[in-house]
Image (cartoon, rainbow, N blue to C red):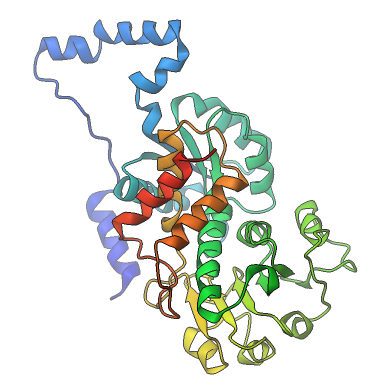
Length: 375
């Protein structure tokens, strides 16, 4: 099936993927008087007396803004806010379908960190959470960091959704191959939003980080603060070449682009190597090639291969739990709890199943419960 053509035809027929539906019916003057004026003034006055009642008397408690500037959309790059809108609509559909969260796409015609922070801060009163999406690094880090004191969770899914699902997949993969997190070497290819977030969450594993210019090491003078922070970590292993980086590695995690590694690099890894080639739609190496090189477990970001690592396993449950418990921040402890809970759904992981299906009704429930029980 030509999914591109089908998606375009659907969008043209429907005029987008989402709509707003009323929870009430307006059939007579009494209905109108309660839903709007004069009745609505009573609700407004209640909130004016006690602003915390906005959570109980409006849609705020179940609403998330999906915010993007269109600068890093999927694997398409900087395509602008208008072209990003269909993706944000799709994200909103997933929020509703999987977690019954009402999400609203907001695309911003600016790449200024200050303008994005100012805009999101200004609209935050109407939402219970903010999902930042497809904003290029390193600006995405600055934006998210600057928005942490809004009093509602601000979650950059490209970073943390990816990191949570990768950690869950890694924990189950290690069970299959009989290795421990604190004994492994991990090569992460890609040092943008997803790669840096993964590097932070997979402690205590030892890591090597690679960007478009090669391995990140102390000889590099072009590192931004976020890459330098990873380099300074006590579990960081320096390498000068790709061959050195892959030598003795147990896990490869790719969030970089098509064809970044080959069979020769995998053959340099330890026995029973784990390969997460997550670039979409074209992975760093195709699964059949990785397996021919000796990979024990291969995961991709695609749904047409086993072991899809998909953020939809994380963000609906994360926000469902955060909204239900009025959690103000999604911190590292919550992310790890969510990853552990997600991994635990698969009781007996195998090389062909390290994660549950996104369509499993257990996923959102289990992840949301882990977030709700956050202490």
